[in-house]
Image (cartoon, rainbow, N blue to C red; front, side, top):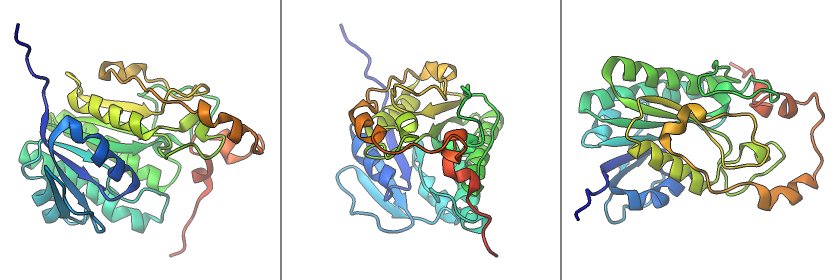
Length: 272
């Protein structure tokens, strides 16, 4: 009996490939795609087998258009990844996400996996449990850019049929750093599996999914609206719990205790 080979992405573009998450996804996704085009604004390591390295500024529309040509799917990790002034966020995160989607339209890209963030919903209270279709409540300029990216993905699906997954990533680091991350932590292995699920799910459409590992106290985010992805996280924060719980907790009225976005809700404003 012959079996039909599982579908594979022929060429995956990863933007932000020189960053912490991009470096990890470059390695962890390699078994699941035929080839990769890796891009960042600077500091890219040399290409390995079945890889291309292309330097590109996301604010450069023509450059992004050329970058996307010939790719079948995009993992869009590029851009400013922390809270900054609006002017610093504008080029890479606002113009950049438009350039990615417009290039995807022009070149017939089938799927985009967009790295959104918990900061797109950061002003929701930690006492709440959010569904994937909850209201956007960004906690800063960075969060605003991620909310904008989610809406861009929605628009390009409704208008042009480009399927997207918007990953509201919690805290993806080698290990959780504090009490908040006992809830929000997403291991690199689980992030790579989530991306793989988004690339190969039979039905994607426009999907929003919360990115967290299988953490014991994770009651903030309900992913039942993204169950069609088949994502099953394998890691959790229990190996780190004792060390973190031995440290002092924040007061009940601190931003880290009250809001899902933590300290981001009070960063800025920034000088002219």
